[in-house]
Image (cartoon, rainbow, N blue to C red; front, side, top):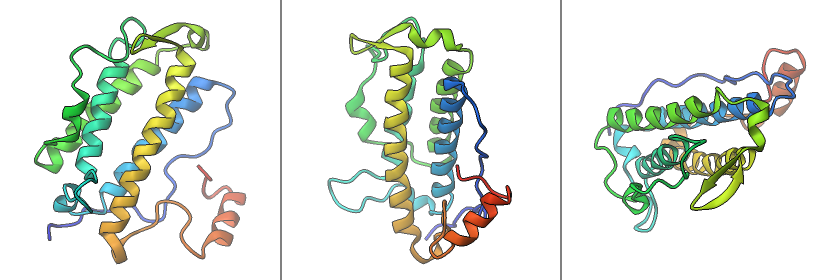
Length: 195
């Protein structure tokens, strides 16, 4: 087996900040799920990134490739072009991911960079603007919500696969088993955040 990558200890990387800004909260949630997937992928070997658990399953690498392809399509020229770009070949996202962890993570970072570059300059007034995805009209808020549902779905798949492969080496990404009382105490003491 290949080497495992360093893993953060029992930490919660993002404090919940009170906000009434939809955009600020959406960005915080995107950052949270990006880091959650990264913390999961850090716990598997390079080989496990590309392993499948059955012939119909996707590897972590394929899920990452699909997410990056979706991000490129949805967030490039977000306000001015359809979110399903004519040059996107969605079916190709499910085959032949980059061959190395480094290549895969570069694709991952590029995808997330497009998400944050598109959303960070938005204002609350932009939320009612119209964008299209596959020709269907969405408000900017609806388009963001669509991806706030889509990406965590795939992050959950990544976490499940990573936990399966890491097995007894797995370090919890949330509240560890039998540690709920300690977690609640630490949140109440403002040592940790629940998000």
